[in-house]
Amino acid sequence: MTHEMLLDTYAKLAVRTGLNLQKGQQLVMTAPLDAVPLVRRITEHAYRAGASLVTTLYADDETTLARYQHAPGEAFGTASDWLFNGMAEAFRGGAARLAIAGENPALLAGQDPDKLSRANKARSRAYRPALELITGFAINWCVIAAATPAWAKSVFPGLPEAEAVDRLWKAIFACTKADLPDPIAAWEQHNADLRRRTEFLNQRRYRALKYKGPGTDLMLGLAEEHCWKGGGGKALNGVFCNANIPTEEVFTAPNKDMVEGIVCSSKPLSYQGSLIDGIRVRFEHGRIVEMSADKGQEAFRNLIDTDEGAARLGEVALVPHSSPISTSGIIFNNTLFDENAASHIAVGQSYTENIRDGSKRSKEELAALGANTSLVHVDWMIGSGELDVDGILADGSAEPLMRKGEWAI
Image 1 (tube, rainbow, N blue to C red):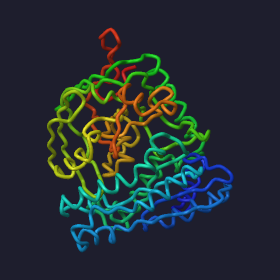
Image 2 (tube, rainbow, N blue to C red; image 1 turned 135 degrees about the horizontal axis):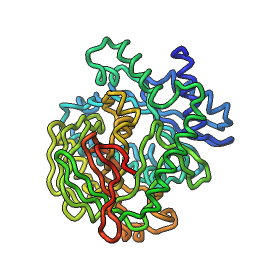
Image 3 (tube, helix red, strand yellow; image 1 turned 45 degrees about the vertical axis):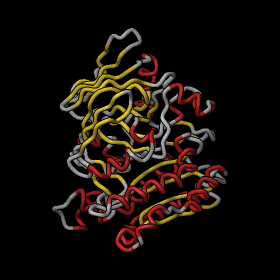
């Protein structure tokens, strides 16, 4: 198929399988400027699916960078509260959410760490009302990606720009199954495979996971009444959607107070325009008490200093080392892809869907079960072909879950 045909198939996949957009539903979309061709195709498919209104908010890397280079220092505690409040209001009114990733992963490298910290905290506070609706799975939402020149050059630095963009698009189409003869059917089968994995884990009712690998020796307690999820799921509005395209993970909620030991990252983390690599942390009683990073250390420190919950875990996910994204051999410098190439953990906010009847419980009840609360939710990768994971049962006995990064069950 031509690039244009693949792009159209990808757009349809995002609307039909990612969002499962409903007739009469509004769609709020965010995207980088370079993603305009994809946005236009998604918009067309959204209206064909019966959308009542599609609203797209564009981001531009150059104007984002201009703020850090020229805005007055006192301005970095300011965020677009009005915009995020409007998004939250749209979600409460039933709108679906589609985010298109593709920003330059190292856009803000070399900028003032204090400005970055204050701006990220202000944005996190302003975005909180919308984030709670997303982490609570109140609506059907989805995250996909678009190949942009800056992102492509970070992934394939030795290639000319046009060739790098073309190669990144081909990788995106392959990882999302958009290049298969029937992508929608392929996703139905993929969801069924992930569902079988989550059903097994939910039956075993492990109380903890034990990680062992190079630089990693970690005991990670799981929240009481935790639920494993993976692939597509039904939002509280009754719509079945796939929140991430691609996805290879099964995930659940850790106990925010029951994480002990050391863990190292296995892939770079792109966070708010900073590339963070070589993360090493030590947990005591669930909290990060020591940290370092080979690259972007100040950015990671600022992240976990966002609030009390940012230094604790809100998600744990298992991904086989042989996942299609991992076997591609590409480090995407983009969490949407890299988190599906390796097992990972996330600092910050827990997903209420990972607690049994989580949407019906109060914040106090969720906290008592071990769920975490924070203004942020940021995944970072810890899995590799050398990582072993055991499931710890209620009686303290251990069962092998993963060996050398592969499922042992």
